[in-house]
Length: 318
Image (cartoon, rainbow, N blue to C red; front, side, top):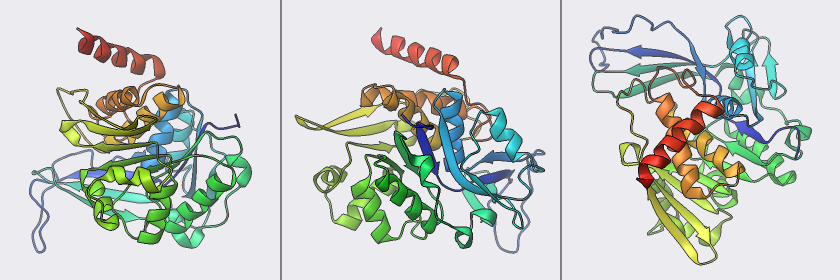
């Protein structure tokens, strides 16, 4: 095994969560209801996954760019506090670190406003191939196309299996590149809308047809409160299993719960667990994230995480 078990690719983001009393409408003023609207929550899909995995003891390197402000704005300290390695970070001194404004109205509908800053594609350069040597997985989430294409190229060159977190973003994933990822990835995560999109692109009646044309061994579709479905290639054929959620009594913020699901699944996968149990681990890690504002605020350590997982397993066995 190399220096890092997992590498991640995707946008970094400093999130501002702004809750408003009514849907945003042109020409109208919406009142902000949360007094902590200026607070910064550090994240971005690749960072959320890397942070969660490092909290669980999986040495995971995010490959990304930040602005010259990343020490002053607290982002470097945030990463160091989570034991996230910094070797994959490139600093663009003249730029700002990416910023995201998440508007959530009283109907729980969202509007996202994003400034890419240092993650803009104009700053993309070839990645350091030595970082990929011996890695067990490379995780691709939404980012500038040029960055993800380079990340994928490095994974292929160094024989690192790819995990693809599907996103409905044709700027990041134009159809040709999307098809490359869908046929070249070992594990694929989608939600229900994204699964239907894949089926439409290929003209499939069912997403399991991907197993016939690609490298995937596992495809997972998350369905919110309805749990998830795991499709797995086995010697006996395609196995389909539905997995329930780890139910949270009080949901504070769903942002980042999908990234937590991926991190929990990857933890189990790297530890040799069956895919259905990996899905349960994903659900458990999402359970922690749902109960606090911010994508990484409530991520547990390994002992606390496994304790909750064992509790869920015990309930299912009684």
